[in-house]
Image (cartoon, rainbow, N blue to C red; front, top):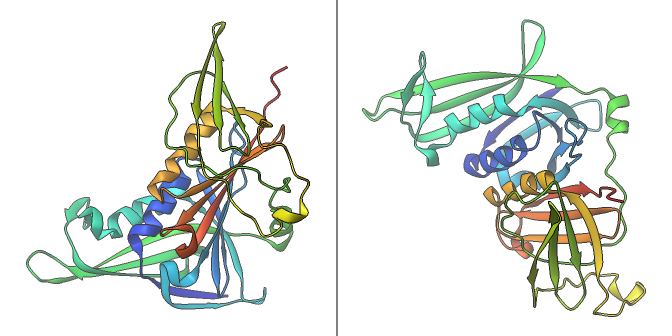
Length: 289
């Protein structure tokens, strides 16, 4: 089992991990020759928010080499806080890399390599960050992040949820703390309502003239009256966690599967047609009888 690559877009990977770290402590990373998957199963907290993302290798890496007996795939689990600290130090766009004994060194022309290694018999990701100090002196900083190789049995247990076809596209920016739950309702006229109830008071916000996506199989689905509303109630806390995905991109598609879940697709690296990957968030419905 071998893995080695250069991180060509540290800033974007930093943003992705930052978004995931707002949701969970650990993340499953599935490495393959063509793509990298970041998976948050949603079994850590009460909100049940899941992330199933796929990023094309050239979007984040170059000189990408991977070998394994599992169709050249490697599945591993990594602590997101530990990974975030390394990427924060490697991201020269933030201006700081941590070197030495707790000191801060501003690097220029930083180059970041990562490889799967072993330290004291345990698998680790070894990050080598090379650059130059303000004085022009070359410097290399090494970080080791412990990872856990996932068994094939565990791999089979990680399956993406099956959901009905999506019905709505919109961009949602922020939501404050209003209540325990929020109900999202939308129709094919491009109307989106957010409703909350708190202390006997009901509040709602409405967006109109939102764009509706066109899917390849749209003609095969049963038509609905454009004014018909579809709604799902979800945890407002989980919804707020999803909104941290604005670190990655401002382009998203939100889909309401009535009474089942809300699915949000956040496109990585630009507009939908130019995206190098997508983060898929599943926000499960809540029973509020």
